[in-house]
Length: 265
Length: 265
Image (cartoon, rainbow over all chains, first blue to last red; front, side, top):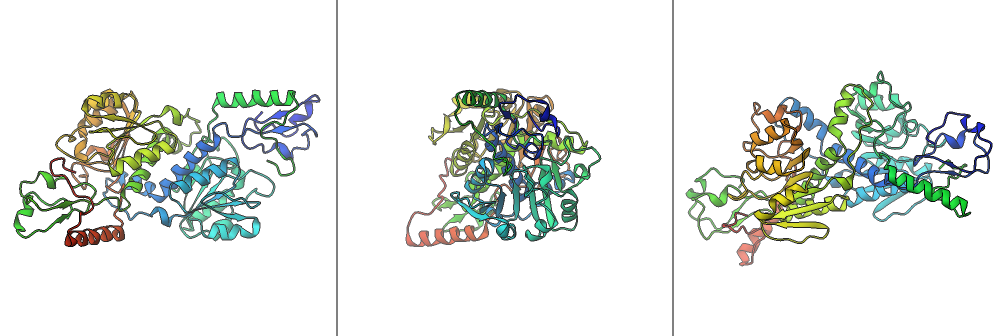
């Protein structure tokens, strides 16, 4: 399943396992109808991390190489060789260092960016500066020209991308959201873009999906909206993992992607 | 110097060396005023290959992830999860395997693309399928969904990106030009885009620069025009290489980037 309506799970008394068809399992862990003692599994890898890294790389390159401004110049047929931002002057921060965030951070570091990672608990990755816990969040934001959010959605991370977070970033910063829409406070993002604190955002996930056609994100000149396509499902890989997990459960072995209900991921 | 007018060099009888401020030295080698026996040097590296690789990566990601179509959907506030092209189904071909093309090819290969390289003479690079010589050009084009041109401009490579080349590529292909404008036959590109043989192009170099405001490239929906900014000059690195080369010449040592006048690069 993918995002069941609240209470939906109560009608199945004989569940042996719940296999979520996503890397994130919100809102299942906070649903009181979730039966106790039934393993909740999420998809692990199945091509998601590499695709997320592509999306993040595209977004970071677009900001660093000033592609939105060059597109605007093209519409006016104006030849204007904008001063570039050099790679070394464009530090990137990745929020969340799970299966996805780790690959995103390491691919960006391999491309020459100064990459820092922030996670709830300390995590060391080659070539990635490590920040951990809420006390280090502001320091992490201060040094990040671009922030890429790849966190799981939990009560602790909801609305983490808010006015206070944007204010802690360097002026003229950028935000990329490949986590969940509820990580972001929509109005705070628009305010930060409109007052110049942020200079751009690329968003793949939204509080309501499909994003309603009346939502201001669609028409904001500094926001790129994509329709939850950062990591499209590769059916063959998902099928293989679902089959593998059913086999493991039948044999009494530990399945892939077992969710810790207290942590929510 | 950078692209001297034809004949300009004839007025300097005491030249000890000519230091070109670019990775490409066209049109100097074909100028009859070029004094014999004077070393002609081009810039080597000075940050160009990594920047060119960023530009090529952005272009390939933009095509593979269908970003132009998603931007068009955003302008209509339409949520439409387009079927993606997967990385493995998106073979990239790099024309030219010199200092720049080699880095471009290897970065794209590291990102998961099936990369082939084509050069006048055979060149082996880890993870890159090698094609060499004019007899292998069509085979190289046939297997490349995207072609990235990083060739030097010589009489042999001028107008190499023409109707015949586009016809040899798979239908719905893409072209990225970071070589020279004169590699590309402008009218042939527009015809191939308009008849659907090609689906997009990203161009940084042009036959006439600045690109005249009346040129149809500016207004073509399937062409991204950037104003020769794929590899901006990093003044400090250029200065260091110019100083190093003058010192080497004064000491009688071989300089960096000595151009073979017959080959033209």
